[in-house]
Each structure stands twice: as C-alpha cells, then as structure tokens.
Amino acid sequence: MTLAVKFHDLHPTPAATSLRDEILMGFRADQKFASPKFFYDQRGSELFDQICEQPEYYPTRTEELILAAAAADIAEIAGHEATLIELGSGASRKVRLLLEAMRPSSYLGIDISREFLLESTRRLAADYPWLEVHAACADFSCNMALPDGVCCERPVGFFPGSSIGNFDPQAAEDFLRGLHSLLPTGSGLLVGIDLIKDKATLEAAYNDEAGVTAAFNLNLLERLRHELNAEIDPRHFVHQAFFNEEQSRIEMHLVSQLPQVVAIEGERFRFLEGETIHTENSYKYTIEGFQGLAGRAGFEAHSCWTDENDMFSVHYLERG
Ligand code: AVI
Image 1: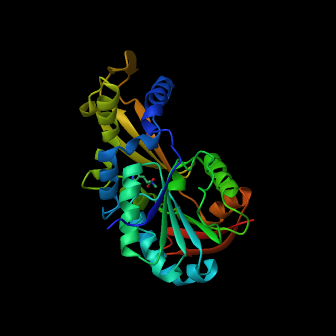
Image 2: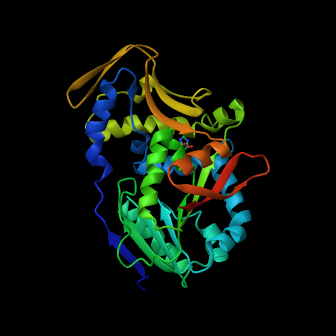
C-alpha cells in the first residue's frame, strides 16, 4: 500500500557542504569551536537517541510527561482542525502525544534529512489514517516559505526538545523572528525549553555514567576523520561538560590530552595540553526569561506548563 504522505522537496543545502568550511573556520579561532549541528551524522543521531534514554538526561522524558498531561489544554487553545507544523520533526515521536487530543486536520513535518523524514512521516500516516500528512525536506533555519498545498488554517508550530537552547540567545531570538515571518498572524507556537536548576543535576545530565554523551561528543572527531580525512586521534581528546552559571549554559568541549598537531585538509592545527574545542552550548532559561526573548521576536506568551519539579517547560506562544 502506498501511504499518502504529500512530499515537498525544498532542496536544502546538505550539512556536508558547509562541514569543511565551517570546521576549518572554527579550528582557526583562538578558542577552537565546532557547530553542534555537525554532531548529527548517522552515528551521532543514534547516540543522541541513546542520550535521551539515559537516567541522568531528564529533558526528554520530562517534556514527554508535560506534553501528555497538557495535551487536552493545548487542544483547547489551538482548537480542532489545526495545521500542526513540526520543525525538525526527526522521528516525529513527541507529536504523537498531541495528535489524539488535538485532532489536527493536517500535519507537516519539516526536516533536513530526506530519508529519515520520509520514513517517519510514512509511519505517522499509517498510524493515524485520519490525518493528512505532509513532509517538507527543508532547512527551516534559513528563511523558508510554507510549501504550496499545505492548508494554512490555524497553524501551530511545534519545536520541542529544547533545541532552541542550542542557539545563543540572540540567535534564538533571530530564529523566532524567522518563524514569525513563516507563520501567519494568529498562529500558535509550541516550544519546549529546559529550565535553570541546580548545577549538579544539570552537569549530571551531560556527563552520564554510561558515557553516551562522551561518545556523542567524541563522535564529532570520527566524523572529521571519515568525511574530511582529518588526521586527528579521538583517543587524544576527552569529553568535558560543565554549567557556566554566568552565561546560564551547559558548555561541551573536547579537551586535548597532550600537546599535539592535527591536520584537516592539509592545514595543521596546534593544540596545547588542556586546550579545548568548544562543541556545544545548551542554554537554560527561567520561564520569564524565555517569554521575554519570545516577546522580542513578536510572540506573546499564552500558556506555560511545567513538571512538578520545575525541571522543564513547554510554552504556547501566539504570533502577534
Ligand atoms: C538537542 N539538544 C537540545 C540537546 C541538549 O540538551 O542541548 C543536545 C545534547 N547535547 C548533549 N546532550 C544532549
């Protein structure tokens, strides 16, 4: 049986195109850095799924609990017959917590990874035969327009997982401003964002006992070896993650264990012992802090749900 997913290919530039240039640029900086978007090759995506199951990594399961408990409220606010638009839909897992309660008339999953997007939206269409399912292969972080044929009655954007926390606050605001242009007036936007909490809980979440986050971080170097023929030995680096209280962010780094020189595309980069590659920031917010940021991008706070320990928050914002 062919399942009715309406596929829209908006031809995004594959991440691999920018890998070389962006990595070289980051390695030339005084504080070496690499964008966290490069974590997600096949192996990196698998490791991220495993991170979400680690006992210390509370965000995923906490957000799922919040969404399940708030689904009826969300349905009431959004109204039935909404068009639910998931940004970076990946496995389209969390949206399942909303579908029965919301009964949207259509769903649009947007993701840059074509195969993954098709596979997961086909599964969604099979499991929810009453739902009109669209899939758009696109990079929603670059100003995109909604594909033709997607009904734009009562659109509700869905951006779970605290992914917005991986942007610096100014970039997060700019990103929301981009969504403001994408979504028509009166649209809703449902966003999951991690909250500031005690340092020990935060740091444990990024230093799980099983070493999965460490493997995820170090996998970046494997990717550079395979895709850029980098002469770099992952055994000479270790994972580091800590909470930077001043900046309100978890920082992840790869720490060089010895003085060494690595080569990427013929260019040599010197590392001192203890010198790091800064690989990720994961910003944590207060509820008011996040609502203020959204407000500056043109979204009004309508409702917010948290868990009983105030670990994580889900916001319903209205596009003004
Ligand atoms: C995808 N993102 C929200 C995760 C986070 O918590 O910042 C990525 C991650 N990095 C290490 N663990 C999880």
